[in-house]
Image (cartoon, rainbow, N blue to C red):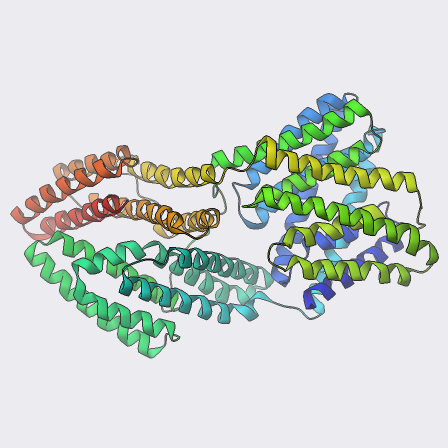
Amino acid sequence: MGHGVRTAIAAVLALYLAYALQLDSPQTATATVLIVSHPMSGAVIAKSAWRMVGTLAGAAGALALMAMFGQSPEAFLLVYSLWLGGCVALALRLRRFRSYAAVLAGYTLALIAMGAVDDPLRTFDIATARIAAITVGVVCKMAVSGVLWPVTAVQRLESRVARVTAAVAVAMRDDLALGGGQGGRYSALLADIQGLDDLATYAAVESAAFRSEADAARVSAAALFGLLSRVDAARRALVTLPLAAAPLAACLDRLAEGGGPAFRLAAADARRRLRAAVRLADRRGDVPALAAAHRLGEVLDLLLQASGESSTVFAVPEAADGPAGSALIAGLRAVISVLLAGGFWVATQWPAGPTMVSWTSVIGALLASRTNPSEVSIQTFRAAIWAAVLGGVCTFLILPSLSEFGGLACVLVPVILSSTLISHRPGRAEFGTFLPLLFITLVAPGNPMVYDLEGYLNAAGAVVMATVWIVLTYRLILPVDRAGEVRRLLAAFARSVRDLAGGRAGEPPPAIAAWEYRHHHRLARLAAWLGDGRDGARVLALARGRMDTARALVGMRRLLSGLPPDHRRQGELIVHAVGRLADDPARLSTFMRRSVRRLAAQGQADTGTRRHALLALAAWCQQIAEAAAAA
């Protein structure tokens, strides 16, 4: 409710200032408030900043395209559709509000250029007017979010970190005790950790004073992702070292209770026992035990990070998150929908055609990154119908009897407030998001108001037709293929294994923390596509197995630099073989088990540091063999 009230106040304030400044399109200021609206102040700041970046890029593109194709609408539509498709594809390769800026740069071009289609010389005036209106909307929303009942992300960070950490610890303890079967539960936990990481990002934006808390929360989120990605490896390790089960369970119990001194004592006890197991396994040359102890040691390190007992810091990657194939398909959908709308406009010469093309671009671009765009497209169609009906009632039955701004505000506020509340209901987010946007567009509050029934019906028809093209594109022409999206994400994990295995000799491996961070978010996206169920759990286990293989490759490449030339060459051959066999788990497992036996035999025959290095290399191979066998 607080979020809805802040949004309504900011929207009305933006409209009032747009009137006072005599802007050409005051409704754009209100629409900007609705678009950048978010319950968290930090999210509003970040989204507003990137909205300005996207708007400026789109305005520059509009000026360039109108200068080149202003006299050829067919060529303009073709080039613009490619522009929008490229921006959408780029958006799916980026994360958070950088992704939003790319989308905005795509459809802003249409919002500016389509308004000047009958008079290309007005393109610059429309661009400056839009930038001015967006600036007013951004400033109003940021001011209201920062002054009126501000809700900062840092206020929620501590409780959210504690809640999600406890949930992960309990789920992992139950999984290790019961021997698996937590697939659906892990899917929900991955989404919770993703939300925690986003919250940490918002907190870092809000103030420099919050940055340390945000960095600590991001490290905790990364550690929790890491724990869930290692659960299968930890389960296999406990089969080899069953005596480690009780100490690890004690650590998880203490972490679920809130950490603190009891957790530190339990972690120290578990660490001592692991060190004793490593020494015993090293004396015996027991490679499986060494591999199991190493995996459990990684789990302990992550538990310490999740509890806030570690000072680990890493750079957060913001690019190349989604698979390139998925990004290209999403861009192709944007191209198809714009060409459908543009072809209809050119064929019919409909006066409201530019509005139809513009909203086709906006809706299509905003839906591209959703995991369920087919279902969401129906919500946008319903929102367009409701907006047309409500807008008509308000424009022709209510507003003509009002003459003051206060009366207009009383009409707009209930729609904005109720839509904000609807957007927070499960399964209704897009309906509640698009309804006020389309409503404001159709009512088009101006000073003075113009009551043109024919113009309104044309605009309403254009908005509804825009959603029709989206529904056709996303549900019939190029529907979303969930199985295909899952395959592409799994292929991205396999490609990462091949890239790590194909590194040049002597080239240092990537920083494991940043590498894992990117793949943890791919894992969360994969869980969102899969949902709950046995098949989903199996696919998630396959992805986690490929992550285990990739982590082992990083460890092997670090070890190789300390080996003699002959053993280093042998290790490099093993690493490259992993890359060749990444898509054939059975052959990979067989090959790595042979490598384990060979390296273990060489280590037993050697002494000193070379013996330790060879056994460690064999232990990494053992991890890859077990991960491949489990797949």
